[in-house]
Image 1 (tube, one colour):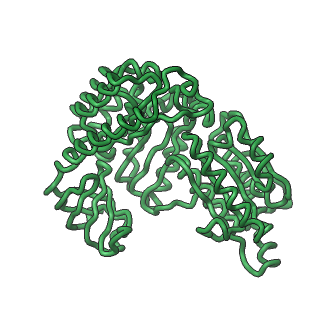
Image 2: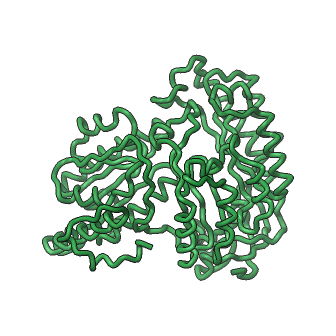
Image 3: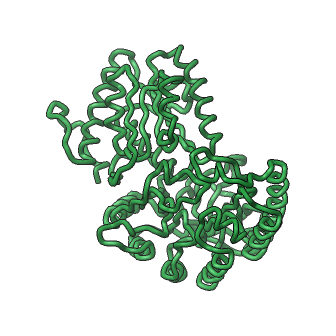
Length: 486
């Protein structure tokens, strides 16, 4: 793996290689020279702070940003106001995320007066949105570096340019066909990791801005994915989360197409890997082949996040979801026949333009029939740049709030019943951390994604452990430990 390259052996006087990712390792070596110069001038190493907004794909991208900065010699600094280099990895799915970022930039602008050498970088989905770049140039000219979603692998090269320049460095691409993953990564957990298998989206749900900022679907080569996961397993990772905007359509853009189910079958064969998770799954692309593989698998976790968004076929059509309520219900029944102990979770948007009380009742009906373990509920809000923002039939805010509250009450009642069925059983959990609120407890995650808090010490973190579930507390359990499984 390129992560094992000895940066000190790179001769930066020879100039950068043409091919990726070797080119980026050359620029990491150049950044290390800058760090050494900084240390000589200031008597300390420079520090950096990476702040992440948004989804798990952004979180995985931020691990790469942190990995590059660490390899370059920067020390981690949790307080962005005290950092020499600050980078925001942005999200733009909801409009208020943009306002939050501008607020943070305003605060940093004041911090920068105390440290005029501070460098501020912005990357991620928001940088791909129309109008953002011009606003940054006009109102936040102190920003040092701006790049988007398509060229995050170029961060070492862009970091080098930023460190050597007093001007704003901008490199935002409209699209690309490249996927480069072999750059340093600073994993948050030693025992589990996200793995990008594809990027972009072709679905164009009319409320969603992702296809416009992440681009069209592009799948990584299966041999590259398998090589990465084998390396992770050899390094002690027992659980991977396969990431993509719509993992069910994986492989369609490859020169030699394979299905997501076939990829999962190959991943399952990797020694040392104990658990496989994935998200997100679009219902229209979830195949019978995938259901069969999930049913027979010993490693795929018993959890499926399957966003429904609405229970009304009429609203689903307006959303451009390309399935009906009946098709979705049939799909969940197929899944439960193949995987009886599956945990189903979903997303629901309340108050989409044109939604009537009858449509909302259809949503309540699907919640009652599917009986999800967890539902992530959202009040519809306009997202500039999407077709839904200019649709007729915008629902009054007070009506949306009323429906949201009724849905939440229904969801919480059902979820409490569904999640409690495991009480008294012994379950395998992956121990993830010391409990945030009680240091005498550990927190682990079951295959079905539910959390369990139980007595234990930090030596168990990263282990698979058997836990007896004593009491369900709605969305988590209190348990008592048994023995290490692996």
